[in-house]
Image (cartoon, rainbow, N blue to C red; front, top):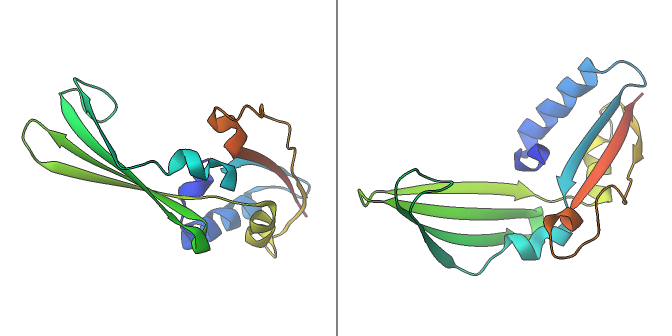
Length: 141
């Protein structure tokens, strides 16, 4: 889902590079977040305390917030981390989510065809993020 964190300009640069790197009939397979992930990504404001963990090997407090920008199909996940030194570190994760139509728009005119959308790659268990990921297989012209 690394494709999801790219802004429009970086996404266009990447797709152009992939198009130049692939031979004719070469295949690009990738995964993206869908609008089915929004409820899991947008959490209520929360805080958690850890003795050590993802953000630091030292004790820390993390404040979490998710904000949706529906018109842009983007979710901001903000994490503010406080360690013992009382200095805050702010981490922002911008994640774009995609529909099939969005993917067609991104790759239109970029030298790709045959956008395949195999819906059954992952389980449809609504209790995990697998349901929120779609895989695409796109062939270069």
